[in-house]
Each structure stands twice: as C-alpha cells, then as structure tokens.
Length: 101
Image 1 (spheres, one colour):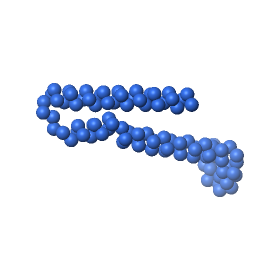
Image 2: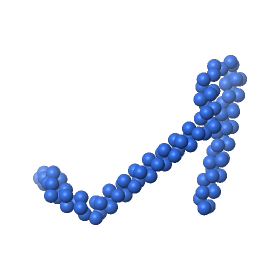
Image 3: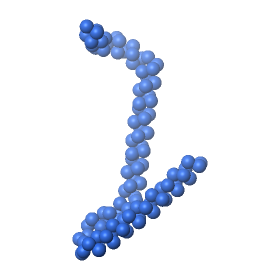
Image 4: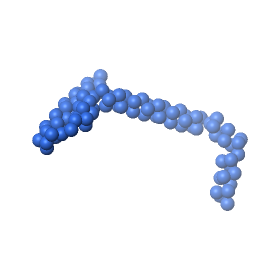
C-alpha cells in the first residue's frame, strides 16, 4: 500500500513541479552539476598531463621496438622506471608548491 502511494506521488506532475521549485532540490542540483563539471575538468587536465609526460612517450617508443634479448628489455624498463620516478618527484614538488600558495 505504501509503495503504491509513493508511486502515485512520484508520477504526479504537480508534486514533481513543487519539488523541483523547492530550494533544497535546486541547491542539490546545483551542487551535483558543479561536482560533475569539476570532475570533468580535473579528468581532462590529468589526461593532458599524461599525454605530455616523458614516460608516456618513452613507453610508446619502446613498445614499437622489437627487443633483441632480455638484457635489452631490462635496460629499457629501467629507463622507463627512472623517467617515471623523476616525473613523480617533479609532480610532488609542483603539488607542494601549489599547496603553499
């Protein structure tokens, strides 16, 4: 019985319009839209940083090469690791600088 009453209220156009005009619902919609927009911007920025990173370029270059032996593969992976570590350190420093501002 309760579910039937709730279903009737949800499908009532006047009730929906009144709820949509209420301040809490409007504010919740604004906050949701803001959060989605900020997440999209942050995701776009992160993907741009990844595409610009030296590690990504190195991985793409190394993926195109055919390895000669296991020592060659190990050397390539070491180069990629070193580049990755240096980029993480730089990102950490940039992040701490931004926090200080």
